[in-house]
Image (cartoon, rainbow, N blue to C red; front, side, top):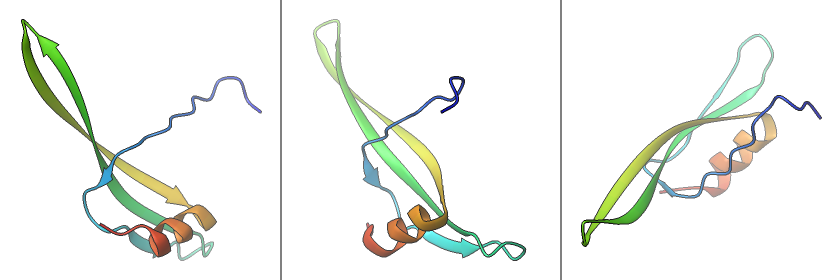
Length: 72
């Protein structure tokens, strides 16, 4: 495995259903979806909530599985 690649695990809620498409030249499946992840923190004794949104793309079989089993 390459040592210069970062691995990221995102945990959150789907903001919409995944969209599955296929590349014309190679018949590769692509699932596009977005996740929302909340973070709660305290600043100056006040509790605050921050939401981050992540646009994601899954290729190949993983994209097909996400499209089939993950719904909002």
